[in-house]
Image 1 (cartoon, one colour):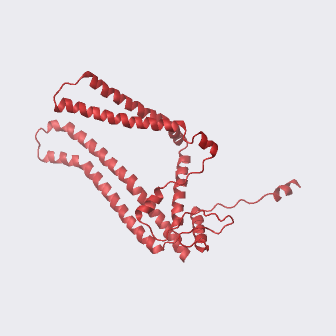
Image 2 (tube, rainbow, N blue to C red; image 1 turned 60 degrees about the vertical axis):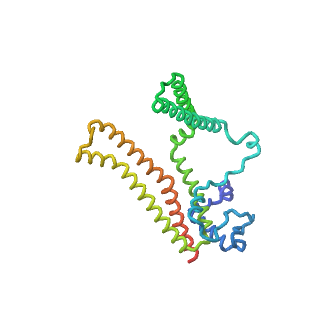
Image 3 (cartoon, helix red, strand yellow; image 1 turned 90 degrees about the vertical axis):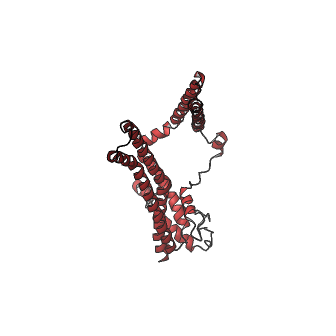
Length: 290
């Protein structure tokens, strides 16, 4: 009897569905609902609460799509008890203060060092001992502020190192929520328009990546070309230029790698994400219209 009573209260759990399937169902219900005309996206449900953002009535610009992918989701409402105490914890405020102190002291250190260099090398005046001590003190203070800002971020960094899969899953869920929201907003756009925009984005992506590889390769090969030229045609003071060439090669390699990383993070990665979202929107809208 106890087993039968337990079975009477048992209900099967609903099966998990793919997020793309949820997006397809949401777009289908939005398009078929009587209130989903124009930019109104209310879905006919029991509570009559719109859960999707406004759908695009036309294909927006590429920069607007990139801004939609870069936008963070709306934060959850903060309870009154938490907001009364203060939503920002003190370690975050202290870390921000340390970072601002580091930026300020670093700028002051650079200005002081430039002034000392001009005073000594351009004006040919001897340096006062207190000016050198002041520059060193500013440098030490900037290093201390940087270390303090790093210590304030140490718990979050240790949490990422301790469980990197959790951090990666959280980032994937956040990116997936943003991409699904953009897919729902593109539900009214014709697949042919999306395909045309997808081809243009793919072209821009190839141009950016090709430019980054070319510039990085030229920066890395420039010192090697100088060494080759010096081997074919001996340069004046060639024996004294070996150390300078090695330093130049190291600087060029670092600058080329930094430039390639900057272009990848700031240009290639957002364009690649947009290309992926446009491809999914073409597939979903094509099936809905078919």
